[in-house]
Figure 1 (cartoon, one colour):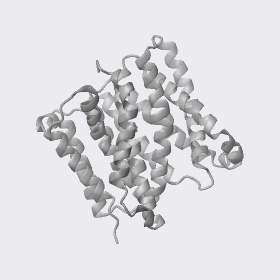
Figure 2 (cartoon, one colour):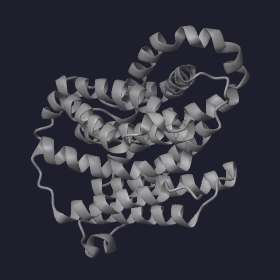
Figure 3 (cartoon, rainbow, N blue to C red):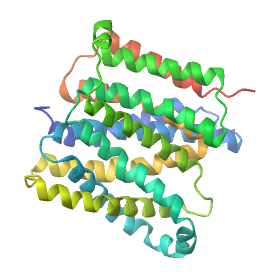
Length: 333
């Protein structure tokens, strides 16, 4: 992380160049001639890809600043910034829909608690007490598994043989990447307190993903984010106050300030808008599977920004994950 500052001057170009590549690869030449259902499917896939590209940068930043700021403070500043931005974007729409919002306050409370208050906070806590290997392995493989199970139980979404096969391919790809193809690394795997926090973060995020699928149709997307961002931040506030009373004050610098800007604007506002839109178009299970691409994109960022070398392990891992996503997204005729 000694070259961590490079990230700020390069990430915007990386995101938009990758998005351009995504648009070329994902959308077929006859996209505009397709029916609405097929268009929505392609758009949903593209939105899921956009999200994991942005969120992969979030993991790099979170790891880079964990020694500079306590976990709850990092989460609170992130969501406070996101809440300010979403306030200006969604205030008028919220006022117009406030009666419907208050009528669904119990549902919105649980969405805010799971997706905003707990998910990333657990990740930031885990980063202090577990290795990067454990963090990535548990987080990226557990969430899709949880989502498949919860969706089958709550939403009655079918678990087809192709979907199971695709999920197994994704898990295999992530395991190959994290273990660097060395079985000894996996055999030496042990759960720590941080691993439990990571597992909890994956579980609550899978609940959030499933809950988003059940969003009341009368709530406009920007109103939905307005409500859960502000609600989730308010739920974090008492824990933030307690943390500031017992932890040393945060020493601000350019890297930390830039990190808050990125995760507050990119990983929060843009990322959640895209993720929720993807869920609405292709479902919670199919969307969740794209989370397995996060370590792949993180590796590409490390190669490009930090000068790390890409190996055969990275290529095999990427091929397995992409194959898994293709299999999981094939619909039965």
